[in-house]
Length: 312
Image (cartoon, rainbow, N blue to C red; front, side):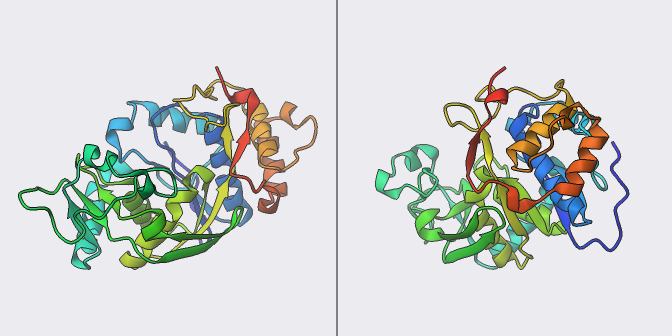
């Protein structure tokens, strides 16, 4: 599948990076549209990356179906699609760099052991914060299962939608994994490595990933990589406040009318498309969207109910 010719001398590089665990739904469309429009309105490049590093979650054939859906909706990406599943050697090299710098340590803790951590050790996102069991060395007789980053310091950044953000890594997150016990490289390491290699300057994505940003900035710092600008769009939810996903039975957009869905996504993003635009062609919708895109109009909320697209 071929993308657009890459514009030369472009300083803005954005990307859309779906996980092929299920078909594209309305929430995915919102993230794709927001990132694509912001790149195009800055005269920049827009890349597509398939984040299938977590191979147990990837559904065979789903990535190809996602790309076909994007094409049907009028999306055009620059260059070739990057597949994380083909880049284990790149991530291994990044891990070796972390080891050489003393930024990571082997961890022998099992999920069961971590599940027994007291509630007082909950991280900011509600998960169990790592208690530091192996930080100063493995317990006698134990074998390493995973590799963790030594988390410390306070990360501050300004999000283009959500405003100023601050996170104390040790208190709010704890030492986080970069290589799992099953040998799969963690999302944080893969994303940071890929963004740097692809020259990504702006990350526009859903607010469900806002909690990952501090860890990614931390990794960028210790690896000596540049930090992109971030903008986290509201996450589309169902009536129960659950993020639209395969697990919450979100309706796939594969066969939906593209112009109607694009206009609905524009409305969700606060762009106030005119009445009747949904009856226009896909090309006309894109032309209006590129001309009128304004990040300042995106609602500054983490979640937003999308009733029309919540259930099959």
